[in-house]
Image 1: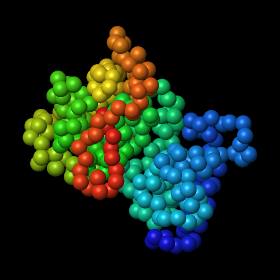
Image 2 (image 1 turned 90 degrees about the horizontal axis):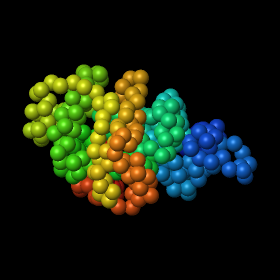
Image 3 (image 1 turned 180 degrees about the vertical axis):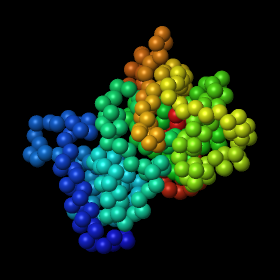
Image 4 (image 1 turned 135 degrees about the horizontal axis):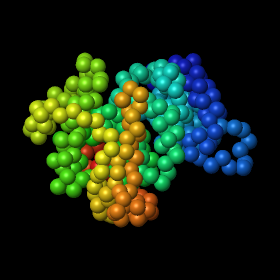
Length: 305
């Protein structure tokens, strides 16, 4: 059974069902409705929140189907608002290795997800300290691009910024030097906060030093500064330039940040954000996609942040 025993499949299904039944629709930003026969979420609602088909999720709860991927487990953990211990337990039930905190499959604290759900009219997303997007609301996807399909080093927007010219379309060209310097200073601060032997950070820095002369020159300046409150000009392919305040809420360990964007005072940005909600992701620009990504069948739709 794809590496999993029948017993573990049954335990996995029972655990998913128990976690689904404890969540109120309002906890995940869904309307309660008037025709619910039992408390908790419906199976199709969990499937929608996790980006899975209803049939596939039904199979999981029945203790059948194929072994869930690590990406699917991470999505289910977020959809079901699992604690860190529950998330790790779900990985073990699925016979998948528990991921190291800080990567694309990192556990998002339920409190951050709750805040994200309370920002339906504001572009918002949760990222790691290495600028890997973990979850984003629809307005953030419309503004910045749907970023969850990137894998490996490319999952980090900082990595893409210095290795893929398409990533820079997000900002006006005149702002590129400022953004480059800010990204490098932020990365140095994040690397110092992590363990000195952290392989993810060390590998990224060594790679960028080798492939990007711009990064190497900025790294040699030894600037250190977390990005907390920025004023940014975002280039949307349909709407044009939107001037926004980018605000950050850091987790206790600094490994994750909730980002949200508000209109800059004295600009047309409030009206442009309203237009963005209408336009959504209808107009997209394909970033450069590696052969490995195309083979895997993924297609990141826009640019990054």
